[in-house]
Length: 201
Image (cartoon, rainbow, N blue to C red; front, top):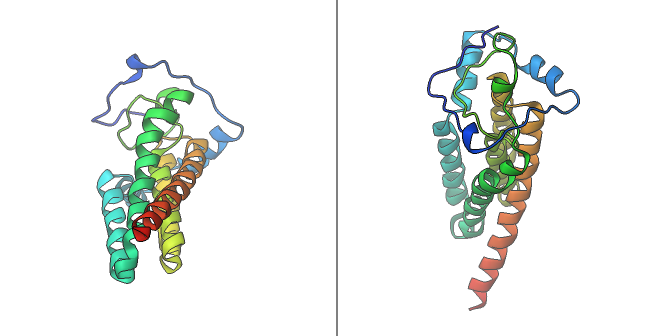
């Protein structure tokens, strides 16, 4: 198994003390998902985990909502923006420091797992890739249910990619899905209040 450190990694642990802890079944589930799936699956998982894919898919969903809802897209689009703000910014600056959990690619002995993508030596709980994708999926479900199966399928695939690539524990991803869900409903509630206030003027 390959445990060599990929290029473009950086060490942020000097600014924060990280803790290596695993929840029940974390290691077993990590080992199941981190197996060698071959060059094609490796490349697919790397692509799913890129920021370019996440941004591109988010913009595609936003464009789809705008095209299908027209003037009624104000609330969904605002909800998307607010959900991502809560999920990514608050997740990174408020939630992750609370747990300060070490990533598996820094916690496990080299050579005992596959590490296929760059990852900072910083807090890993929750997975923000998972959080952001599930935040998008939930807003899409609330706004345009027909698009939801695609959005949730992509969210699940991106979440799995983080474990497959060796940069997150399964419980990081599960926590990310929950955090993204909370962010989505927060964004939906706030956007609804903004819309009602704007209509009431």
